[in-house]
Image (cartoon, rainbow, N blue to C red; front, side, top):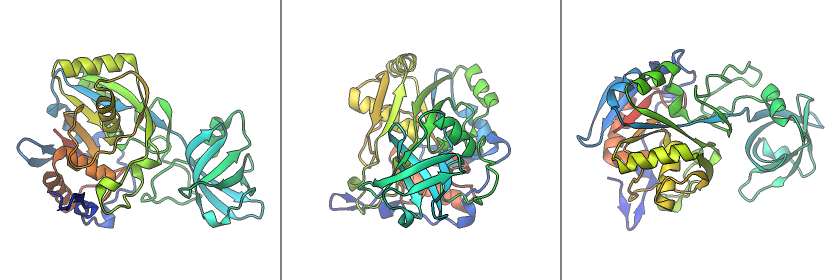
Length: 351
């Protein structure tokens, strides 16, 4: 159980010791070759398995929900008029051609400063937002996405190390095989394990595979800076459910069929929909739900997820679903059993 200090739940109760060498730096050649820790909530046990055996944990009538967002090359390397080098990580388009971004080093940016990217794309630094993010206005009105595809790099998280000048070998692999709708600055990493073959096998056994879209943004990975978890709020992210998927999910609830979410982003979207509307409502919505201890899950019966950072909002969500003691014990086992962690790492199935 997390430690309650008064009415507080301490983020420090979600800490575990993770050796640096367990942070996966490269993806496996075979997407479905990852290890999978299978966690059983009812028996409060877990067992080592393989992702390739996922179909054995599913049954006819289940609904497996994927996030079909597509990552765009949001990391840019540029230079100012004086030749100073900058790295710009695009976070959110505020209005056409105006972006919030993370800039490194930010101290070199003054209002009006011009930035060139590969001498093909130019931008002007406007100012800094209240949260410290840079606001940058690009000159391009047409062909911006194509330029990004040509000169941008895959927006890998900072714990995956790559040489700045290296060839972008992650462009295809840091993308799910079902990615369709462009707009994410990070992959829904639980989906990276799936191959077309395993999705076909799952469908053939009578499991329905459904898709929603949530463009993974910076808020998903923003560190929890509050001592009390209840004081932390995950930044809202837009998601969309089409009418066919909404009807399918609502029928699954009525018929008491299991809904298994692939990833915490999918989970947050589905839980937001049922919490806010009492139903899976088609259309575009805002996932503004922060899941903390005490929350009762309404939408999902199972969760496939990667292993998350210590003291992160994603680990909190996972622990609320699986049970704090069970999940923290499972994480400690994963460390001792040398599982691979984070985006390119192994996965956990909680049922």
